[in-house]
Amino acid sequence: LLLDSGGALVQPGGSLRLSCAASGFTFPVHAMIWVRQAPGKGLEWVSSISGSGGATSYADSVKGRFTISRDNSNNAVYLQMNSLKVDDTAVYYCARLSEPRYQLLYPFDFWSQGSLVSVSS
Amino acid sequence: IQLTQSPSSLSASVGDRVSITCRASQDIGSFLAWYQQKPGKAPNLLMSSPSTLHTGVPSRFSGSGSGTDFTLTISSLQAEDFATYYCQQLNGYPLTFGGGTTVEI
Image (cartoon, rainbow over all chains, first blue to last red; front, side, top):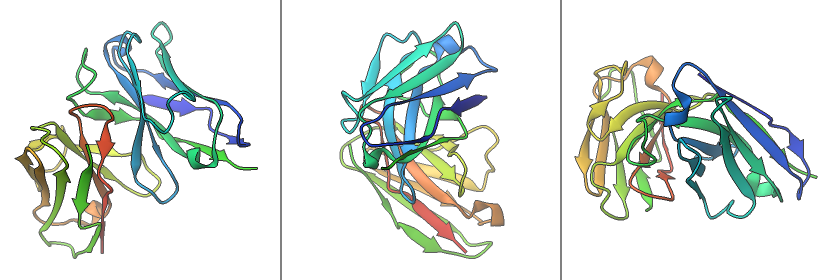
């Protein structure tokens, strides 16, 4: 089970941190991702983090502004979002890579319910 | 790697056979998955590889393809299948999704 939180209305240039709490599986061995969906649009991968937290990747659209991290002792993954833009408005989902100890090549089998981030003045 | 889905939408009836295609801009081998998303809900994994059904997915769903061309087929559309379907390449960063195909009544 993945339960995300932290979505809110924020002004352009502001910051927000999303959290995703995991339960029911061995969290530290699974890579995690954040995916977003702008209103009425398709899915966009945002960022990935390995099980250990030692490897991260970002979409070009958020590189340098967003930071993914995880706390394996608390079974949680985070997305720190800085310098937010209107175009960052979306529902943000966290998801689990299905195969332990991989970062790629396998799909995402559990998804959170989604948190709405609205960036507007 | 860009993924192009077609059609972007289609209208069908219960019982129809429906096929959706996904074309990759370069060879991704068999590293492609399919998801189903209903309005206001998170995506659900349908196919964990081009031809492998995820656990619990009905057998009316099937898939095929490798390299650059992939197909998702629903053999007999049911009411609960009206949704948007996305392909996703798993081969490398940035991970990318197709634009989606909405299956409407």
